[in-house]
Amino acid sequence: MVVAVALVVDTALWHRRFARALARAKVPVRPPTTYPSITVIRPVRGLDVGAEDNFRAALTTTYPGEVETLFVFDDASDPAVPVAQRVAAEHRASGAPGTVAILFAGERPPRRTGKLHAMIVGMRAARGTLIAFGDSDTRPSPGLLTALVDALLASSDVGCTFAPVVVSDPPETSGDVGYALMLNALYGPCVAWSAGSLGRLPFIMGQIMVFRPEALAAVGGPACAEGQLVDDMYIGRCLRDAGYANVMINETLTITNSGTSLRDFLETYRRWMLFGQDGIPVRCTWPLWIRGVSSWLAAAILVVALAVGAGGAALGALVVLAVQGELLNRLHVRFGGAPIPLRYRWVASSLFLVAPLVLASMLWRSVEWRGQAYDLRRSTDTRLAGAEAGAVPP
Image (cartoon, rainbow, N blue to C red; front, side, top):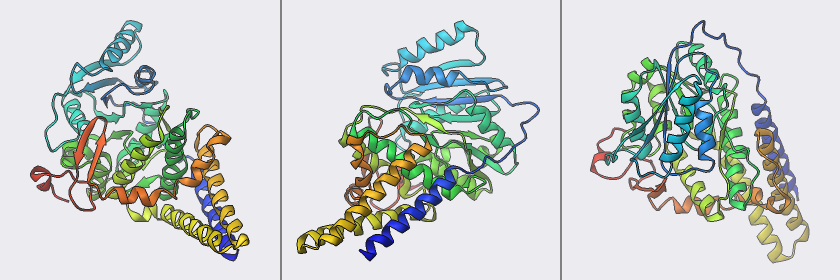
């Protein structure tokens, strides 16, 4: 019972730290007198949940400068192409600010992920002074782009700004709950805690990211991430090594998701752990490892206590798991997520318990992402397998 009390207290203390990190005050910045033009490149592959609304949101910006939006597909056969074409035509007909174009990147080279290939092709066609990249399954608010540029231009050493993602849709399945909790209760609060009051991090979480042109040029553009599975985090590391800062702003970016099966969530869980394996330093994630150890210890105590008939110890272990789950649910809501229905509250208590199985599955060095399969090197990094990727420096 003493161990259970200690684990509950430790969990509550970390919950308090994360909650304070989420409530950090916005660092005031002075808006520029004039805003540079910007090109937003949005790689698209497949028809995302709410794709039409996502496309519209991408074009509905209150940015004070000139905005060019480029939707980049593999080819014209993508099912999202007609949707993007319709939204683009409506935007042009409305006379709203900003230009929009649809590009086709063609087949990706072996050294690139599909997303990175689309980024590189889009950048060749970009006319804006600033370059931004945005994922197709996100729905930016009208003022988000302005906030990102304000933070980028606030200091000359800032090379990139990005926004944390939040799942705000009410969950429909247990997989939806797991996906939302992973982002809203684990990654979001932990990254906010790591970033501190200035929002500076050694990596980028690139669902949306805006670059200073000279910073991007200093690292060789997005092509510097050839051979890497996780382009955004790797580019962030390159910027850090080149002397630039990556800044996460307070404003969040909505990511759309619904109808996720439990199996699909576990695959996403594995993919995110692979993404973070070589991109997020341990100094930023160790609180999550501590939370995991606490959960595994409580589960072990529960199993042993039930086996030997120690009712008090079993009850204490159950309390630990219940408290950990409830505090994760509260962090999720505090970050901007919809309340979890009672029938799915068990998912939060299970996130850490299934982590060892997810970790074991990472020994299989292959991952599917947006319909494409990528083999990774037989090691602990996330570089693509093959002779071409082997030539990419670490």
